[in-house]
Amino acid sequence: MTEKELLYVEDALGHEQHFQTQCQTTAESLRDTDLKMFSRQLENRHRELFQSFYDLL
Image (cartoon, rainbow, N blue to C red; front, side, top):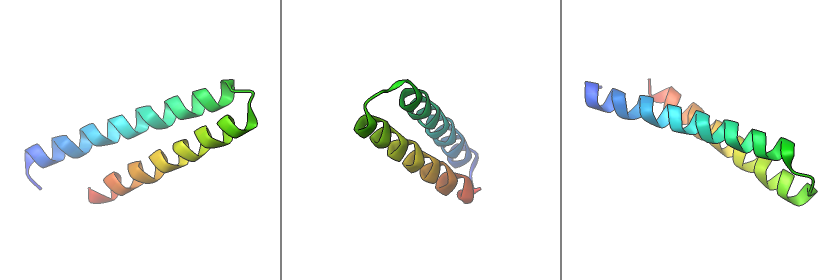
């Protein structure tokens, strides 16, 4: 893996981690159960994407 590719993967990891945290924070603050569930689903999806990028390393 080239240095440029590695930097891309590291950047993508950071973004996915940020999105995961934001979804978690949002879910904790929501009262509507449907929105809370949707936010948790997004959080899980970003966790999966993070793992996919991490597996590239």
